[in-house]
Image (cartoon, rainbow over all chains, first blue to last red; front, side, top):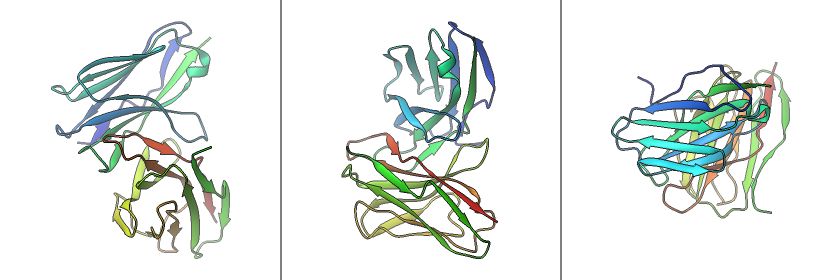
Length: 112
Length: 113
């Protein structure tokens, strides 16, 4: 079992729709969870951090965490063509400065 | 402006040569990381360092070496022992606050022929 798993996609959604990106992780002791967006040929940029069970909203983005199910998701409302990118889920396995492990990413395509 | 600087952006080398990738940060972060990314793949951890003069191997450390003589700098050497060195290399740092996210540099694209 991979430590952090994501569906590679591509996930295609029409412009204005909600895009739902999912991630599962293997270490039940994981403390912090991050979503990064990566455009082709560029470095990842942080979109959301989440540490507690429940939802966290920031503009059009909502991160959801369920530690019991070892599941974290990212919802993008009113998807725009500029949201087309690869979304990486990252998990800090033990908290603090311990190594951060990334999933392989989900490629999102927003169709105009 | 605070940030992470990786240089050069593109690097070309002949097979059998060692090459060193630079990573400098002025964010006053203790922890620094090196990742490798291959086309269509996620990030794989090469080495990470939590404090000066200390570092740990990641998942794919073979063929790589690092040093951490200064808090601001974490250079990565790709040695001739690395079988498939052509990749996109990303350096990141992490702040002192508990559970801080990683901040990335712009990356170095290494091509070895």
